[in-house]
Every structure is written in C-alpha cells, then in structure tokens.
Image (cartoon, rainbow, N blue to C red; front, side, top):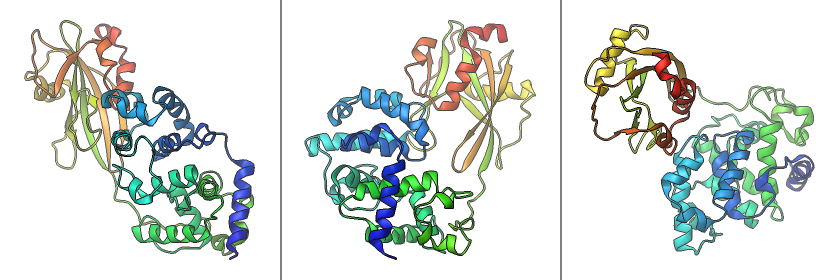
Length: 364
C-alpha cells in the first residue's frame, strides 16, 4: 500500500464532504477538547446544541475551572455519562493551575490529566496543534479492521494497540488533524457497522475486506454478556406541604452523585418477584423508604433505562406522605421550583415531566 496515496485520497475526500460542525470552525484546543469529551458515546447531532450552550456558558479554560462542579454538571444534564464532565472539570482545573490555562502540547503531560485517555490526547493534539498522533475510536477501529482485514477481536486492547501503530505509520505529518478526523468521519458516515457504503468510500481500492467480500463480516467482535434485568418501583412522593422527596445517589457506580426519585428493587435474579399491579405489595416496598405502608398509591406508567450491563424496568407510583415525615440524608424534600436546580438522570426528568406535578392530586 502506498501510504502517501492512501492518506491523500482520504484527506481529499474529507475536505470535500466534511460536515459543518461548530467545533470544526476553530482550532481552539479547549473547544476541541470539550467536543471530543461530549462525542464519546454520544451521537453528533445530539452533541451540537449541548456543545454550543456549554461553550457559551464556559468559553475558556479559566471560566470552566472557576465554575462550581454542581453547576457544571447541571449544564451537562441530558448528555448522560456524567463522569465525563466531572473528569473534564478536574482536568481543566489542573490545566488552569499547573499550565497557566494552556493545554499542554506534550502527550505525556496531557495524558496525565484526570480522565484523559489516549484517544482524547491524540484527537486534541493532532487537530489543535498538528501533532502527528493517532486518535483511535470505535469508528477508526472498524475502518482499519476492514481495510486491513484484521481477524482479531476489535474490542481487545491488543487490537487497539495494533491499529494505533498502523495509524501512526500512515498519518501525514502536514495534516494529522484532518487525517484523524477523516478516519472518524469515514467510520461514522460510510464505513458504518451494518451495510457499509463501499461504493462511496475513498479507500475502496485499498480495502482487503471489500476485495474479499467480507465487509459485512468484519470487524470481528466477541459477544457481550447479556445485560442483567432489574424490575424497580419508583416513588414520586409528595409531602402535605407540596414538597417532593428526592435522593442523592452514591459517589460511585451508576448515575454517581446524581439525584433521583427513590426506588426499590422489585425483582431480579436475587430478589423475590413483586407484582407491579399489586398495590398492596408495592405499598410494602414503599415502607422501605418512608417507614410505613401508604394508604393510597397510584400507578402512573412504566419506563426503561438502559445501561451497558444492566436494564432497569421502572414502574412509577405516586402517593402523599403523612404529616411531618422526616428523612435523613441522602433523602431531601424540595419544592417543584427547587427541584429544577438539581441534576437528575434523564429517565427521572422524564417521569417528572410526564406526571405534571400540578396534576398529581387529580391523578390520585
């Protein structure tokens, strides 16, 4: 394979068809960094409005570093994977204090920042500073696995290391940022997981998978373990004075440090099954939270919340608490107005909107 021709074909294609995205209109390393963090596990079209709002609110390293973490997380609300923004905030603080607000150009220095992995370093330094480093994400892994007909598990660390070495060998020194973005763009738009658009691909003549008719078979990926399914009862509890009970999640684990409406496990592989339609049984579960069995409980509807390794099937119930119910942390009573200041997982925000708090009494 002629490396120069390969890179030239790819970059020329990218410069012709690249999407007009807000983070591509600037070489500001901070804006590029924010965009790369947001784009991890989130679709481009979803990211665009969040990116624009976030950059408007925090236009510089110093602005983000000076912001309160709770406020920053609130401004991320809806994007999910909140560890991303917490790590970004920590890393930006370190850049502000240790490097005078300028993102370091050294791989080792940027890699040492909290939550910053090889992909982010490669993307930011190549695009912003022109450093010839690979930026290998899932799209790039898929493209390279097909072009070079790689047989090993594309999700393995060994394969990633191999692909990083291939990209390092191919990356042009005069436009590493465009090359990396071209590979990502190709994987996102042409060399897609199912039914790749080979006739539109600028690398067709170099692609070993295409040459052997294996483009739909590669990349190879070992099957994941099936997701665990948990049935949970969620309680939207209103006090006699019109406040609502919320609960803060632990600092580690799913939805870490976010707020939620209290919920209890109904059934799983290790829990006794509870009938979601049996309000007497549901009342017994509510007792685990409020200490008594509510007299009247109303079922609202079911929701599904997906995580990488577990599925929550959530049944939402509402009821009115008895007078003077006091609960300690992590529980807290808040008014409807105060609730808006707290950051919740997306599914709990949807519950709140669906119930239409002002209509809870009518529902009961």
